[in-house]
Length: 273
Ligand code: HXC
Ligand code: NAP
Image 1 (spheres, rainbow, N blue to C red):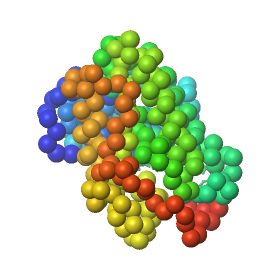
Image 2 (cartoon, rainbow, N blue to C red; image 1 turned 120 degrees about the vertical axis):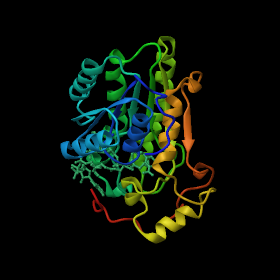
Image 3 (cartoon, helix red, strand yellow; image 1 turned 180 degrees about the vertical axis):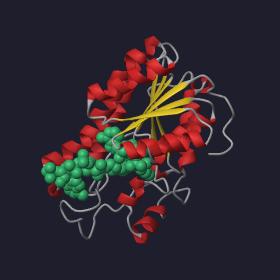
């Protein structure tokens, strides 16, 4: 990524869960370009290795491990390895997520639980396990939520519920960790182009055009938009911000996203995995 303020995060260490692709990899590039050392985790080692290579090729210092955020000991071990390699962690980004379009009656209890476990329990695991390794005072903890946390969305009961939980977890941990000088915030991206998320949620040109028609700024955002906001939250410019859920969505949350009624529900237990 180009033109981030050079060295704004020189000497800082950032741990990014779900950092091997999409929006979170965009954040990794943004923080690396500002001078931070980057440690990423996600499930698939080939994705982790490719992302680490990409970050290094761009001039950054990076490491990565294959870990599922549902595995608390694995998450803790990755944080410990980062701390042992580089020292106290200045920035945590919790962005791992899973999603698919499905009506509630097309979901098994395990399907619902799977998204809750990745998004909400996974965020608890990352934040809870990080505490002992954080720079205290000074650390900035950022979770990635979504507007669907407060705006109900068709065929998204699992993701809406999980992200709503992340919003409340953000506020509760901001209360608990503020006295230790740890700020806890969340970013709610709107629809971001060239991401797995939007490939799943608006898979056709028609659904993409319909969504764009209700975005006040008229288009999807870019990964860079989210990376810039994350960078801001890591700096002293944000030193009095905690417990905030920050929308970066072109105004999407101001209007209903998607139809209130659908002519046809997606078939149960189908769709991309
Ligand atoms: C109904 C489905 C389904 C579908 C899976 N399941 N896909 N049910 N419709 N389309 C069910 C399965 O049948 C199974 O239930 C259960 O979910 C778990 O499926 P697994 O494949 O075993 O799970 P797992 O390997 O853990 O994979 C998790 C996943 C997968 C979420 C299902 O899609 C994934 O790995 N996603 C990661 C990448 C991703 O989704 N990125 C986009 C994030 S975007 P049974 O009962 O059969 O065992 C995003 C946008 C946010 O979050 C904006 C809105 C909030
Ligand atoms: P993405 O590319 O699929 O990113 C998800 C990341 O999480 C990947 O690196 C994935 O890698 C990892 N991951 C998934 N399950 C995991 C698990 N159980 N344990 C560890 N890592 C796991 O999707 P994206 O669209 O960029 O979304 C990134 C974040 O932004 C998510 O939190 C999403 O909810 C949020 N968001 C996205 C949009 C959008 O427009 N795309 C809008 C609002 C919010 P592996 O497969 O290797 O595990």
